[in-house]
Amino acid sequence: MTAAPVARIVIAPSPDLDARIGRRVHEMLWDQGMRQVDFAERVGMTQSAVAKRLRGELGWRSGHLVQAAVALRTSVAYLIGETDDASSAANPGAYTETLHGSDD
Image (cartoon, rainbow, N blue to C red; front, top):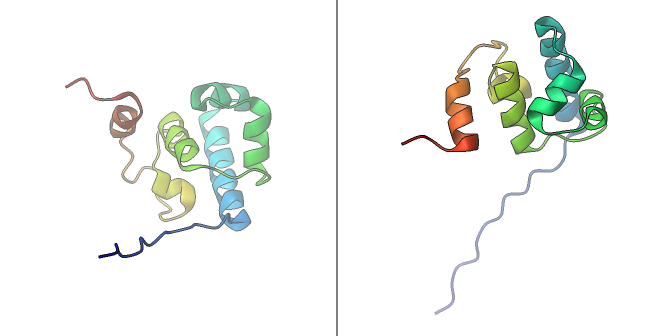
C-alpha cells in the first residue's frame, strides 16, 4: 500500500504585501518615535536590512513579522493588512511567550 501524496502549500513572494508591511511598520516607527536602528536591534536585523524591508526591497519572513509585532506592540494581522486596528489582538505577552518559551 502506498501513502497518499502530501499536499504542499507554497506562498509566493508578494512585492505588494512586502511594501504594505513596510509602510505599516514605518508608520508605527514614526508614531512611536522609534529609530530604525533601535527597531533593528529589537528584531535582530541590521539597520540596512530594516531600511530595505521598509522600502519593500526585501521580503518579510514570518519570524520577522512576529518580532516586529512584539517590538511595535501590535499584531501580525495589522502589519499584513488583515485589520486596520493597530491594537487589535495585540498581546505582546503571547508573542513573547512564543518566542522565548513560557515560564510554566
